[in-house]
Amino acid sequence: GTLSDPSKPIIFSIAKLDRVKNISGLVEWYGKNTKLRELVNLVVVAGHHDVKKSNDSGEIEEINKIHHLIEKYKLDGQLRWICSQMNRVRNGELYRCIADTKGAFVQ
Image (tube, rainbow, N blue to C red; front, side, top):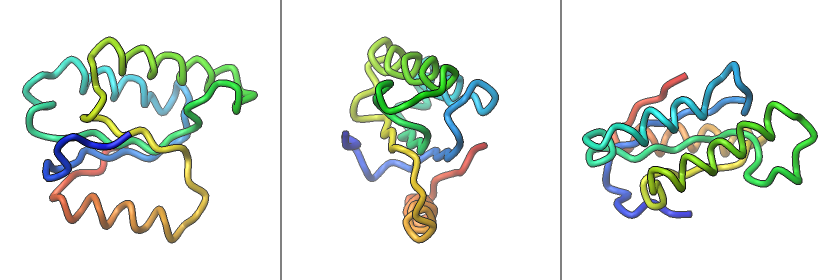
C-alpha cells in the first residue's frame, strides 16, 4: 500500500511481530485516535502480511488482528505495514526517511 498524504509526519515502529511487542496495540491506538490520524501517518515494519508465510502461532494471531484493525478503522492510505527487513542498509534508510518527515520512532 501507499500513504495518501506522504507529506504528513510519520510515527514509525520496527519490531518483531508478537504479543510482547504489541504492534497490534499501536495500530489500534492509532486507529481509534481520529485527530492523530489527521496529523500523522503510521508506518510499521514487522513480521509478515500473509499468515501462510509464518509458522509462529503468536505471529499469526497478530497478523490476523492487524488485518482486522486496518479494515475496522479504514486505515488504508494512513498506515503502511512493511514486512520485516533483514537488510541493515535498508533499515537505516527507513529511519532517515522518518527523520525527513519530522516523524517519531516508537518502540
